[in-house]
Image (cartoon, helix red, strand yellow):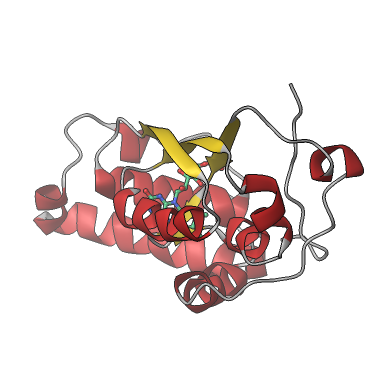
Length: 182
Ligand SMILES: Cc1cc2nc3c(=O)[nH]c(=O)nc-3n(C[C@H](O)[C@H](O)[C@H](O)COP(=O)(O)O)c2cc1C
């Protein structure tokens, strides 16, 4: 088995400063690529029996590293006439992204033989907030507020929770700048 990790020439920092998080939206959605490091010779010179194509979804689109690979010219050589199983691990909104990926695979004459979509078991509102927090602060601990089973959007109408959530969102946006702790 050969493992190939797509790498950008200029990698994203982690955690993402909030401006990176929000600025990445248009580039992701418009599928604007960045430059990638060339794949190793072993990958370029092998005709694979099967490719397990693991990818991440950003803003309903294959992530910028994935789009950069697909548009790099290397992808056509590697994927051409090869059976592919796509594998994504997302919040749960992967379908539009998969449709976009399918267009590339079709153009490369790759044969999509399967798709595995791993999705978050939490509700959509919870996962969007916890991912935002993780990406912009690198923190996963103390998420009790989001993870309460009874946490639902309708509870936000309660003034106490609305204020609490607004504070959290504000912290997500400004904490990379001010190094606030949660
Ligand atoms: C910028 C950004 C945008 C994302 N957009 C989506 C999305 O549109 N749909 C979705 O289901 N998940 C989305 N996610 C969640 C990721 O697909 C993924 O579930 C999450 O980053 C955890 O994956 P990891 O453990 O590989 O980092 C997004 C994540 C990031 C960082």
